[in-house]
Image (tube, rainbow, N blue to C red; front, side, top):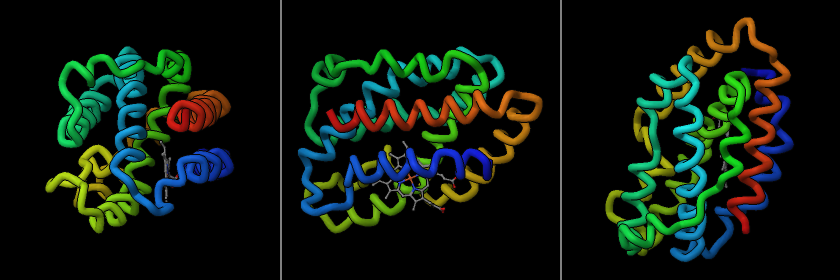
Length: 183
Ligand code: HEM
């Protein structure tokens, strides 16, 4: 886990500054756009991760698609409009091999940590739904425990695997998201 953190620091910084989510104004339109893009990513990515038998049970307990749908509905999108959102087909290519998929899982589980900061900032805005944007904060007060559980799972799953592929999966995911979320 510490190798992953070190080896993807630059990519995290690039994504964080490209997204620039904390720069005012924290407008509804900007967040609707980012959530729509996340939705198109997760629709391809979640089933592709779950295709790896070693990761399936873990993924099944952490799906974010229903939360993304709920947030998009709360921001005014119809079911049909959500179904018509563009899909990020390249999301499957970051997770083709199990080690790569593990690295990619690290990126999306880690996003719940930054999500805490974003959620706090959004709570000041008057356009956010009463329950907040749940997909940025999927685990709420359980975030710390869920992250520790992920670390334990990832350390066990990573043992005996090629570390370079795990790191490659994480880096590719950061790079893909940097492009996909900002276009
Ligand atoms: C404006 C957007 C973001 C901010 C401000 C932000 C901020 C942070 C912060 C402060 C942490 C460290 C938390 C800690 O050490 O306790 C963190 C961790 C992390 N974030 Fe972000 N983040 C943002 C976006 C994202 C996105 C979009 C992703 C991926 C989709 C992501 C992936 C990660 C990962 C993987 C970690 C874990 C690093 C580690 O400890 O190994 N972040 N983020």
